[in-house]
Image (cartoon, rainbow, N blue to C red; front, top):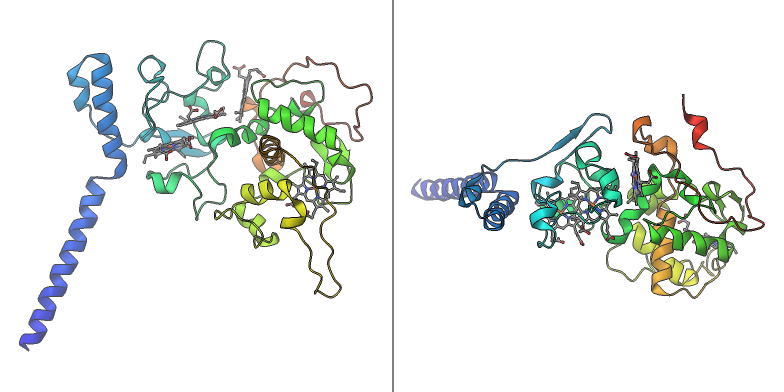
Length: 320
Ligand code: HEC
Ligand code: HEC
Ligand code: HEC
Ligand code: HEC
């Protein structure tokens, strides 16, 4: 009897401390400490001590047209404050390319939010659930140079040989490489007018979810401990035969891949990885009309004999 009481008491204490901890976490989520630090920084920069005590609260951009609720600015508080936060540390830094005439000015955060370009989990509000490789998220968050793989959701004419979309140099580098190396001889890439049939079609490559990719790819030869689509692709471009070596013991035996090793530099490998991830299926991305930009002006001389076989769809044809 006495023993049971002790057991009961200790269980209750354990339960209460767990509850207390949960309540503490609820009251003091990670984002609050970021907002507090932001307010202190803001008050210092603006020379107004009152700003240090601004109320805290989740910040979200509910975009009914794009059908998403982005909460990134809950922590990225200084994202549009170029006056005070241009050189601040993360997550407070003002966004790059917000200067006069730069491309982010054309994509106001109130209209575009963040995840249309960055992907990831719009509503998550902890660093763990928003950054890096996130287990439960099918469309992984994009950072750094990989963010450029989203531009093509809307800027669909950047694949035309006579368009130099100079705000996304990494895509232009990828495009030049694909034209140079003759990838279209094996792969179908509709965006670029290629119709190769010796290898998987790539036209909707960047729309595939992480799960769909995992189901049909062998990761056992990938060295990077993070088993993501982008890491598979990167290592495959570096050395296709290492990642897809075939299987001599299978019946019938599978030979190694016929995709050539192009002996690419790391920069070229990254450019190609970003570029293939930019191939989007328009039906799946389903960008509403008023988010589609006018075609980017053609400025470069198209090569004498463009290898185009399929005429890329003209944007103007989609206008009502
Ligand atoms: C809970 C706070 C928090 C939320 C919510 C948050 N971030 Fe961050 N973010 C951070 C912190 C802290 C850093 C800097 C440390 C780091 O790189 O992990 C950062 C860094 C970044 C970087 C730079 C990473 C790099 O490698 O250069 C990007 C891009 C970014 N965040 C995008 C986003 C996007 C997009 C969202 C919304 C889907 C988001 N963040 C939501 C806290 C947050
Ligand atoms: C039009 C597309 C677009 C939108 C919308 C967008 N970003 Fe970015 N963002 C980029 C690109 C591209 C980069 C990569 C810059 C680079 O590394 O060259 C970037 C980089 C970043 C970085 C890394 C630091 C830096 O400034 O380079 C952070 C943090 C970030 N974005 C947060 C956000 C947040 C938060 C939002 C929403 C409030 C947002 N972004 C909306 C395209 C976008
Ligand atoms: C959701 C659709 C969408 C995405 C994604 C997007 N843009 Fe845009 N972009 C637009 C729209 C719409 C305009 C026209 C805005 C205006 O004229 O006011 C535009 C305009 C521009 C312009 C000005 C020249 C032009 O063609 O009108 C540049 C440069 C640009 N975007 C670069 C980028 C880059 C780089 C990325 C990827 C990091 C990107 N955009 C991602 C929709 C998008
Ligand atoms: C000689 C034919 C050939 C050429 C040329 C070629 N590939 Fe491939 N590629 C293949 C084959 C076959 C596969 C499928 C087997 C494998 O390697 O995994 C493949 C796989 C791929 C994949 C992975 C597809 C998937 O579903 O995951 C990508 C991406 C890719 N190639 C891009 C390129 C690019 C970009 C170029 C030009 C720089 C190129 N390939 C040149 C034959 C080729």
